[in-house]
Structure formats: structure tokens, C-alpha cells
Length: 111
Image (cartoon, rainbow, N blue to C red):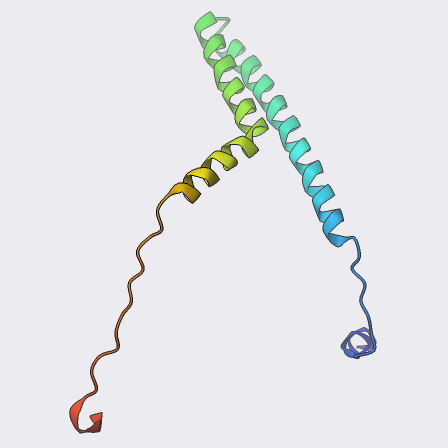
């Protein structure tokens, strides 16, 4: 209860200096980890399909292309989001509809 009282006091100053930098750094580290996980998952997928298809070259080629698309998509997510943002900004503004209030009821509306 003492902590709550201290925080509620107008004389208490809470410093959160650097919190946004910390969040940004952790976000960047998470993005790097996600890219590493996607690369590892792609490689595991290729090996798994190679064993599942018993060495059939067609299955291995399809697995390589699929893993490549996954790794490219994760690695270039900024490119994709930039393209989507450009498309959304180039679209015309949606029309706005204004509703008028209904006319007043004669007699005051009292029943």
C-alpha cells in the first residue's frame, strides 16, 4: 500500500528515460531471431521432404522453392509492408456519409 501512496503523490516523479530505446532494441533483436528461426525451419523442411520423398528430386526441388519463399518473405517483410502502405495511400479516399437527424415529432413526442 505504501508504493501506491508514493506513486499517487504529486511530488513523486517517475523516470522512464530510455524505455522507447529499450523497446526498439528488443524489437530489432526479435526480428533478427525470427529470421534465424525461419532459416532453420526452411532447412529442416528441405531435409524432412528429402527423407519423406525418398530422395525424389521433384520433392526436393519443391521443398527448396517453398523454403526459399518462406525465408524471402520473412527477410523482406519491410519491403512487403512498404508496398502495401504505398497501395493504401494511393487509393482514393472513401466517401463519407452524413446522416441527418429525423424531423421532430409533432406534439413534443410525449405519449
